[in-house]
Length: 333
Image (tube, one colour):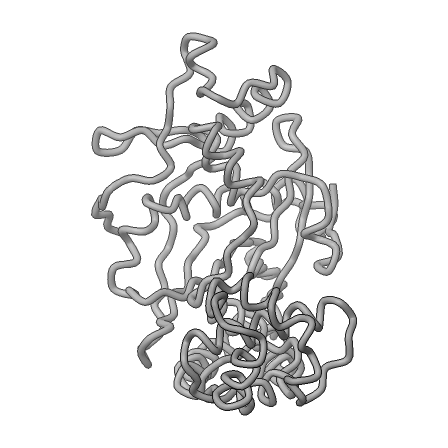
């Protein structure tokens, strides 16, 4: 048990909540845990906001704020592939596209574009349409691109959140990006919490999770659909297993919260308290939802028996399937 270095978190052992909530369908669980993670725009913007709240200097070191050079989709695809191929091979990047003729053909094939074009025709097309974009990539290097319009929206969120989440005036202590691991139900678990808010005067603590979404007003329907309630309960279990390490033994847990920010519009930050205790499985409006403890027990069972094609209840009576994704269910505070 303990607090682990955030830079080592992803490589460290342990199951996290983002996969565990799918254990009711073990074949889906295995597919997700083995899949290559796909980066999506809303994840990028959420990470961007997380980063600048945690360390504002990452704005310049990790990101580039700009409007990209406009090129045709096909050319952009090949230039991206060529740039990736060359940079990952340790070859020095220059602004001369023609100097990389040997990589041009494979870049074309990998991108699925212009495979029928001869090398000279391909280079001529890239020289004509992709030269400016290539120069942009050599300047950008590995930085993540955020458009000017997106940056304006996220800076609007930053200005609202920064005074709250960077406030450590006594009696409050706010720990950000805290990575914890612990054995829970004999399963080694890990999690990265956005914020742990401690009130030393009242001796209380709560988990606060920051979400960015296109549909701020419709966030409530996502709580059950994406099992955000499960996520917070999982994090709370990790905190409870590390009270001594966090120096909050004897402190009382209070309702955790979501802070909701729009990634599309300049809107006020919304706060929603979590009133659902998902440590234990529960029924709600005719549907069953798996709790953290049952999910861990099922995960342990599947590991020990090495059976992943069907849920546990096909092998043992008394264990029901809990679907992690459901249709819209209205909830109220």
